[in-house]
Image 1 (cartoon, helix red, strand yellow):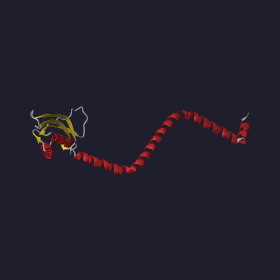
Image 2 (image 1 turned 60 degrees about the vertical axis):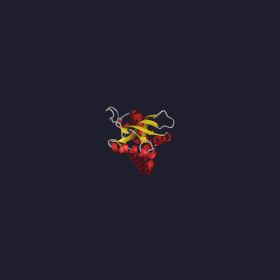
Image 3 (image 1 turned 30 degrees about the vertical axis):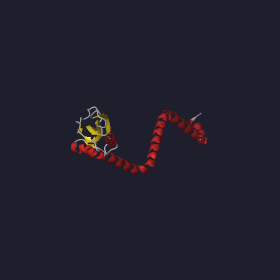
Image 4 (image 1 turned 90 degrees about the vertical axis):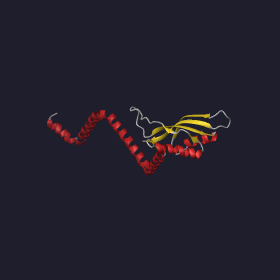
Length: 186
């Protein structure tokens, strides 16, 4: 076939030749891009996941202000129940108020020396402050003191509690020694 015959054939079958060239170009493109398909599927999955997360965030955002206000008020309520580590007189005043409310006699209330946590420990917002208390009174009064400590205005954790009679006589008052921690801030 000569060049003139070939050009005449192309002019006669323009549509068929055009379709053939487009088909070959599409086939070559598919072949060359087929190795990019798994990566494109990963990108599609990641983008879909991000889109779903954004939709979920948008749906939940309408309550965000109320939830923030609730968290702020809860944090304020917690902060109001904390003691201050360095305010010894105010901390002991809490125990003297309990003494007058319960009718017990506190013979030795004292705040224990505060030791900072070791450097390798993670930093915490609140610090436990240790107290050693010796109280004297009847059994119901001592139990009332314990209840008021546990349910009182400060967060309290009992470390140890020992109750024993002052004297070996029946009806004599009891002596209670407590080691406890109140949660505080510096």
